[in-house]
Amino acid sequence: MSDCHNNGGSNKNLFEGQALLYKHLFSFFTPVCLKLAVKLGIPTIIHNHGKPITLSELLSALHLPPSKACFLPRLMRFLAHNGLFNIVRIHYDNAEQEAEEKETHYALTSASELLVEGSENCFSPMIKFVVQPTMIDAWIRMDEWIYGEENSVFEIAYGVNSLWDFFASNNEQMNIFNEALASDSQMMNLALGACNSVFEGIESIVDVGGGNGATGKIISEAYPKFQYIVFDLPSVVANLHGIGNLSYVGGDMFKSIPEADAILLKWVLHDWNDDYCIKILKNCKESIVRKGKGGKIIIIDVVINEEEDKYETTQVKLLLDMTMAASHNAKERTEKEWKKLFIETGFNRYKISPLFGFRSLIELYII
Image (tube, rainbow, N blue to C red; front, side):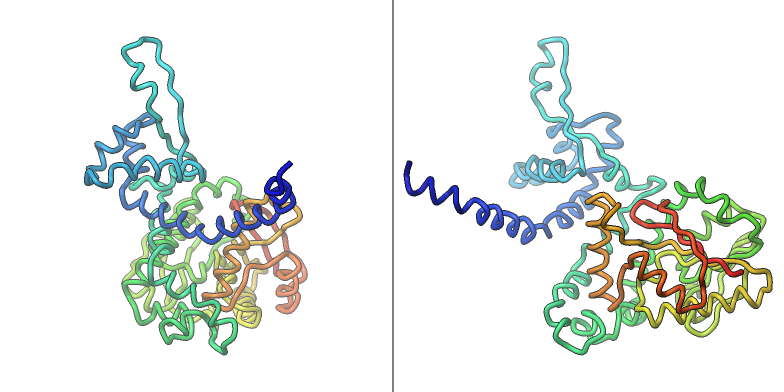
């Protein structure tokens, strides 16, 4: 047996380790290619085709320059390997279709269905927000941030204290961000069926950090009997107009929150460190106490649970945790960390229900 063979066997773990490093080193190409697929409109083309599409049919629809046509099979192979499209083998009964039979067909997966433009739950705005130089140029400064006194990578990249300060001075980016959050909120429709008991007995609710009201419109239409207030910074709600039981109020959640039977915090607390979260929760509690009917705080956020979650779910949560650290000096939390926040805010009764994919529904009760 040759020395080369012996050395290869003994160093197998090192080669596997190197492969893993290469995988992570170039993994940034996944969102880059995902954004490219969205920009080309590939999910929409496949959807409109009405059945699995061949590469030649897709190429015909895309009108790519001849010099780039050979790239399409490689792009689709890569995205399919990462679960964004399905490779479909179609078998025909007659010889005339033999040539087409040999062609690879692609179909949508549950992920790429969310990227069909104009669909009810279209998630494309979030892709466009996250995968852009403005965000990436800041996030890659984490190595500078970890050794410095800056609050976030945005302070290093753009000279502002936080992502929120960056938005305050850049209306275009604020609009892109709000559209991204609105696309995320569309999934609320899918969860409402499991939320009926959550809203029982509520006559009024304040959606703190509710942005342009995407979530508010969905919930207020589903529950037309109670008053729904979208509460956000005056600059966010300035040109927004309520309708029916939905209204908009501008203000600062760190100062005061309009009174209501319940407060909704959808993906808000993960943007802030513990001290700020305690301030927000105390103001929420005061709002409900002023109403004088008991009530509760409804939180939709991530709860890290590495022991019970699937590997892929934990991966998403931990990636978001890194993003929150770099962007806001904040974090995603375990149940133990959530409980610590609640106790410090004066709550001793809560309920966690994993109803929103990688996010959970947390109900904080005021007795």
